[in-house]
Amino acid sequence: MSETPSTEISLVPPRYLFRFAVEVHRCDKLWTAAGAVLDESYRLPVLAELDGERQLADVRMAWSKDGLAWWVRVEGKSQLPWCRDSRLEDSDGMQVWIDTRATTNVHRASRFCHRFAFLPRGGGPAADQPVADQLLMNRARENARPVRPRELQVRAKVTKTSYELSAFAPAVALYGYDPEGAPRLGFTYAILDREQGLQTFSLGPGFPYDEDPSCWAEVLLVE
Image 1 (cartoon, one colour):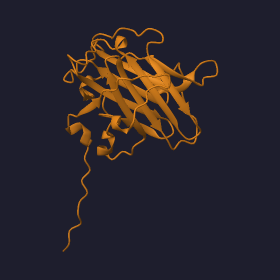
Image 2 (cartoon, one colour; image 1 turned 90 degrees about the vertical axis):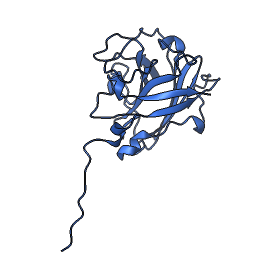
Image 3 (spheres, one colour; image 1 turned 135 degrees about the vertical axis):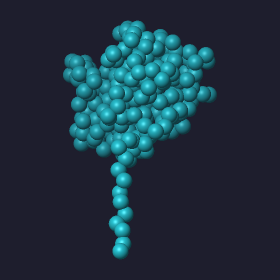
Image 4 (spheres, one colour; image 1 turned 45 degrees about the vertical axis):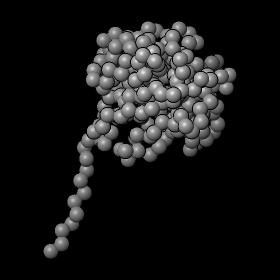
C-alpha cells in the first residue's frame, strides 16, 4: 500500500525565523543633480524571495557622511503609478524606516526612528512631480524631529511601463545618524504598487513592520 506524500504548509514565513544584517556600501558622491546614481554593487538582496514572493523592484542603497540614498526601478507596468501627495501611505512608491540606533528588540519607535515616503509622481499642479515627505509612526514613544521643507530629496523618471526613483535623506533629517560611531541601523522598506503588489525588505504583511522596530532588519554601513 503506497502512501501519498503530505504537503506541509508553514504558517510562519521564513523571514520571521531569521535576524538579517546586510552590508551597505559608502558612496562619496551620494546625491547629484541627476539624483542617486548607484550601480549594481549597491543592490540590496531581495529577502522576500525567501517567502516565495516574486521580485517587484530593484532596490539599491548607499551612504556617506551626508546621509542615506536609495535608487529603485519598477518594471512591467501597464499604467502610470497611482500617487497622491495627500495619501502618502496608500500611494505607489517607496517607504523607508530607519532606526539610527538599531534597537531591534523594542516594539515602539523612539526619536531615533524615522519613516519617509518617496513617490514617483503625485506632486505639483499637474500631479506629475515626485514627492518626498515624512510620516509618523503609530504608537511611537517619541517622534523624530519633523523634517523641514526640501530637506528630503527625490528624483523620478516615469514611463508607461516602468519608473525609476532616487531618494536622499540628509544627515540633518536623521536624528542620531553617526556612521562612524553607530554604523548599524535598523532598516526596512516597502515598495507599494497597486498594479503589481507589495515588496518589503524584512517582515511583510501580517506583521506590524510599519510601526514596530523589532520587525526591521539591520544594515551595516561599510566602506
